[in-house]
Structure formats: structure tokens, C-alpha cells
Image (cartoon, rainbow, N blue to C red):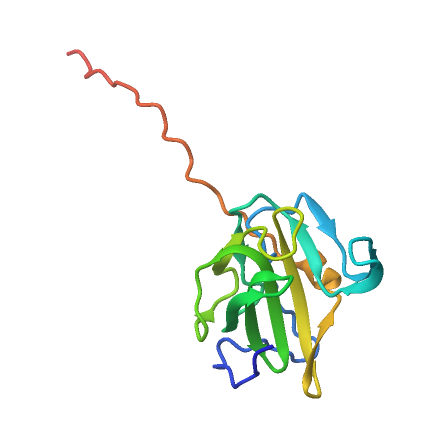
Length: 177
């Protein structure tokens, strides 16, 4: 999915040994449930299949955030995945965000980490609203999905707060002489 092209240095994922990388948790809220990466038996298909990402259950309409800076290389419905956004982070790395209700990015857009790219939905083959997220690495001519669990477990959870309630107005009487 998508191609890897040269990223501006300011947006490329810095893969230097020993250098920490700040990864942003891909939801504006903590997932209420997590469905892990790995092999599973699908009773609806009657077969084993690989779940190539992690499903993060959250209310429909929850903002979906870019885990890393990158360029949008795909925004379209994909069979089973529903509305999907793929970001290319450079140096052979991509992240995929699926089952979106809507996307507010276009192919070619450059995003910073924590940019909102869409909203949690239930598009494609989904039993309820959730975000399906994958981390992919180029190996030869293919993009292979890796277990995102270690990365997501270490991701920074940003606290997106609603504006505080207005303080109750107080009437201040002028001082009496």
C-alpha cells in the first residue's frame, strides 16, 4: 500500500540506534478494550486468519491521531477495513488507521505527530466502533505488518481536554467610603 518516497528531514522518522522516538497514542481517549495482533479463528469465515494490527475500541467520533509524523499516501475505503488512512513515515515505515467514520486529510498531506487524521467509526467489516491500527515495515517489495503492541504500550497518551467550565460570575460591590 502506498510508496515510500523521500520525506523532508523534519518529518522523517529518526531511526538512529539508541535515539528515543516519541510515538503518540492514536486515540484522543484511552481505548475501552483492545483486540490484539496475531492469529485467530474466525467463526464467520470458518478459518484461521492473521489479525495484522490492534483494534482499539472507542466511541464513534473519537479523534484518531497520527502516531508519528508522516505523509498521507492513501485515503480510501478498503475491502474489510472500511475507510482507511495510511501514513508513510519514511525509511520504510508506515502506519495504517482503519474503520474510520470520516477522514479529514488528503493524499499528499504532511502531518505532524498527534495531528487529527479522522474519527473512529464502524466502516468496513466491523462489529462496533473501533480503530484498527497497523505498523508496517518495508521488507523487499512488500510492506509487512508488525505487532504494534510494544510501540502502543510505550506511546505517549496526550490529554486532550475540553475547555474548563466558566467560573461562576461574582458581583463585586464597590467599597463604601
